[in-house]
Image (cartoon, rainbow, N blue to C red; front, side, top):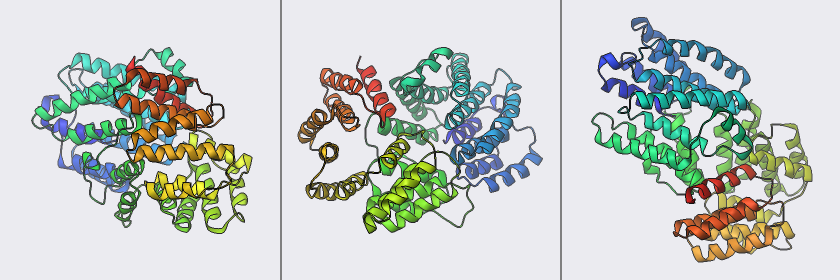
Length: 486
């Protein structure tokens, strides 16, 4: 997300003949406002600065950046349509730049990459593939034309990593536009960029961005924990970086630290509406056991968010809050409302929809254990598991899976291996994700131990299992790891 910062500093470090526009304090100030999601202030800053510097192409990129972030955050069809309209005008500006300028195709590639990501949000997979292909070609062309321009490696790294995780049901699109890439390739390019950054005077500012991309790849695609210190330390007024930090802390099971970041957000500043943060805050609160506050934050998200994703899950989680506070009285009524909102684009919404259709009342002790585990409260989660009684077959498999996950997170590797193996045996013939994810995570353990043969066996086992929920993400990770071993 912080590509613009790097661009501006890179421009400032190059000779004026290479620059697509003058790097000025006004540009830097506008950038800060854009990345902080303070768009009203950013637009005023750009309008004022443009009067004195009307030929500076950077302002078009700043405006496109705001449009992209607005689309991505809001998931609003009208905002998306405006983004595409304005994008065409801005690309025309960049196309007129001097071919000898290394930033020309660099800008064009990044704008097309933003368009592709935005289109994916709206299910425009065919058009997204062609935008992504244009970004792919432009950045590869730029890398060939300007091999010493190492910022190309950052865009190449992101592009190749994204190609490496395309779900199997969309691989045909990649074949049509003839692109290839792997997560390992992308990660390697980002590491090369990091090394180049460290030995190139004036480019030190790039280090945080590269570390950020690498951290996200490691934690999402390699199950490797990251240190929060690897990220830059934004002030309280940069909402986008606060979101990124919260997201990573939640993935690491550092729930209390994530809640502390929420408390540090300056709510007197007028940010672009980011209602997804209410959903994330509710997630932290429900994991902490603050069910009433969680319910309220889920409702803020449901009432205000006009996008597609996480609405079904938010309503389901409201039902959970009411079940854990008041018993069954309001649970089924609230759960039934899941079917009337949102879409089925992401796995967690599909899971919520299935629960609503089945109308089953979950075991509250098992549910509490799941939530506590997600928050990183492993001792408390195990205590809940030890108190479960009279579970059905599916619940027994879930209990076994959560025992394995807790052991794994606590570093009890031998125990985790045994518990994962037992989960696979118990759940391999059921339409549940527990056995498949156990095979994936067991493969991760063997891979980390250097036992590539056993790791590959587990990844193949994962791919052989038939299940519905989280299918694309689990199978995608298994394929990625298997590919890196072969």
